[in-house]
Image (tube, rainbow, N blue to C red):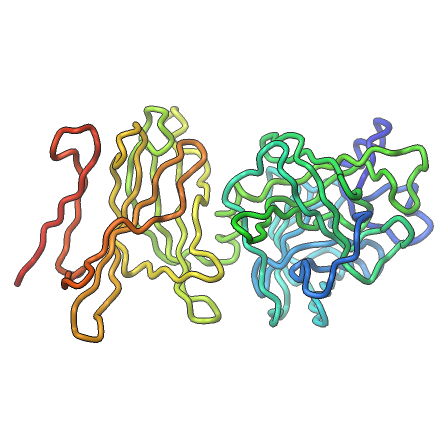
Length: 397
């Protein structure tokens, strides 16, 4: 990544962190690699290596779909704001494990150093990275990976990683400092991963760095700070580029507790490659000016669970009486072996500005039969206790 020891260098840092191979590498001062440990087999499998301009630039990236890589716009232009949508200006090849594929399309993000790169062919056998739905907290530890320079290698063949602490969350970026390494040239575009409930999530993408300890950097530079572009708050954009959203159902309420009405969407992502049903919850918070802020993805069904959008009926209400609107889903499980109709109720409890807790099953039909198709669910405080209740108009036939 770029250093910032002088004004001219800081301007370059904002432009790109890609590795430049050749005599001009140090004068151009592009990005460097993670000075950390080589990853073990299978670790950081979704981290890929980009060759831009047939050796002119090298970057890292992350598979977020079989045919899409998320990386930094500064890999493709000194100023990421100048990256144009469409085919890359220079031939770009991605190496993912034993597979290589050309990049045929770029979709840049205007407000930060991010770009989605579409591959000519899908990459199979590697699970795409799970996207974070919330920002890391100050002091949280992230693992940053990449194919950039190490302390003794210009162009390593293996992905390296290091532990970094989060210093601050600033709008579209994260400030981090290396605990076990630094971000170096060639690491630009690589993933910053957080561990949540035993699973790694993509929280950021490497953008700029001081490069302390990187091979070829100034020996007097010891700082190991870096800047990552946030991913959690543009999760919806990544999914839109992937063309995942198919259909949605909506509900309204004051989900963040600020006194204004917000909009929630339960979105159908369609079937996964392994046959699971996929869904997500998006929230548009009111901006107080008659409109809405950009949507945030606050929950996804994930890589292991299955959630059938067509079996869901969404309803909103303050079910716990804390002043923030929660969400409920009446869910159809289908018929049991003995012919009973099975139905359940799931609740998303609001955490205010932090989104929602993961859904929790709060009721199911058990040994009884409950026909989801015959149910119309509404919310309201029917007993006057300050908490929203649910009522179902049920068709007995």
